[in-house]
Length: 101
Image (cartoon, rainbow, N blue to C red; front, side):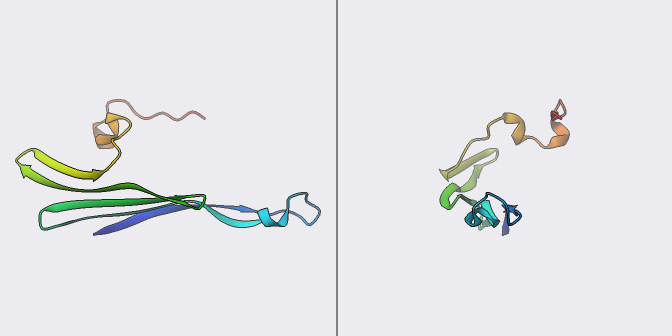
């Protein structure tokens, strides 16, 4: 069983002469994700919850099992990857990912 995720928080501080209302000051968790993955008796499972600005949503929830050699059945709610390169390990990607500065 593997449990992981992330938290994204922002903090706003201002001087006493600032025009920012006090309700905006302090630390706020903007985005959080929790993922649970694992396997049990030949089945694999994955659950992913997302919290964005106080809205909780189920991102992925699925189970899978290998039916025969090379054939896997997956049932549930899941998002397909945006790009097929996301299915490959980084060492197998032909072109290096570039970031604009």
